[in-house]
Amino acid sequence: MLVSPSILNADYVRLAEDIQRLEVAGADAIHIDIMDGIFVNPITWGPPTIEAIRGVTDLCLEVHLMVDKPERVLDAYIKTNADLLMIHPESTVYLRKSLLEMKARGVKAGVALKLETPVQVLGNCLELVDVVLLLTCDEGFGGQTFQALSLDKIAEVAQLRDRYGLDFQIEVDGGVNMETAKQCKAAGADVLVAGSYVFKQDMKQAITSLQAL
Ligand code: DX5
Ligand code: ZN
Image (cartoon, rainbow, N blue to C red):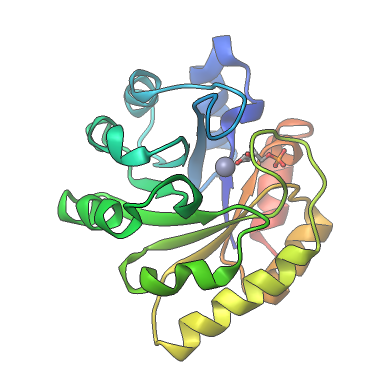
């Protein structure tokens, strides 16, 4: 199981130190939640912060774009040299075009679904994506409770992957802890985003035990 800690729970004035700690603790990637105050109420960071993070780590940087009309800002995010960008179909009418642009410019392409968005929405883009990110709680905040309805969605996406012989990763985001991670794995998840679970205890212990599932 791959573990991608979310820095939403990091210490923002000591971000470089927290990223270093995540590296030492064996994180497989760093999950960066970009919130624009429109698609979701909170505001977090933008391209300059990602560039700064890129400067202090070689870990895979995955950027979860919770922004309205991501096509407006895609170019700036591609230029940060992040490894993977994930966009929401709920935020754009240019989903396919945006995913195609990412691929053409050499960045991995991911599609992220809000908790309430049905899996059917993925119908016209699955063959393009490297990652399907399923929000397993409401978007915008860390530290929420995992919503069990996500388990059926994970299984549905895994079935679609089998049916069409595709090889994208299934990643889950929100309310991950040992117990919910086990359920996600059983349903077919490959990558776990974990924010509070990793930052609120011994990091290495948390990451290692999730990876060992
Ligand atoms: C929520 C974010 C998550 C969040 C997860 O909108 O997408 O990445 O940081 O936090 P936890 O693991 O605390 O639920
Ligand atoms: Zn996220």
